[in-house]
Image 1: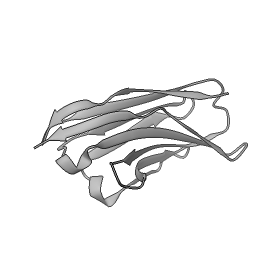
Image 2 (image 1 turned 90 degrees about the vertical axis):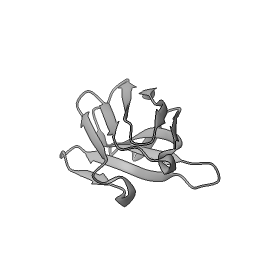
Image 3 (image 1 turned 120 degrees about the vertical axis):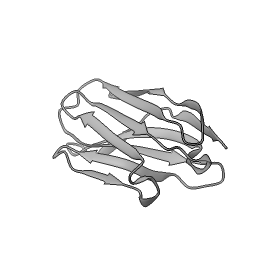
Image 4 (image 1 turned 60 degrees about the vertical axis):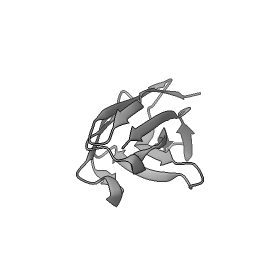
Length: 117
């Protein structure tokens, strides 16, 4: 059973930067996408950024130009560099991996990001 371990996050001031990392333990042989999602209090979970095994990426409009996702599908490791942070970026951030082999997604435990104004 694949498990995801997240690190990074914490507290930053508006305009600052943080970096999140996520790594998988276990086999990642059929890994298709690695993504970061976030959920603010009272809000639904939303996609922040995604990277596919082709190397293509996808970003939420709200983070384009500020966040950058990078990763190694073969190793099952993904990072999210967050720059020019805004208070509205405050949320719990989750990494999620999707495996095409069984059609299942695996989620990390979540890490808190708080941006002060």
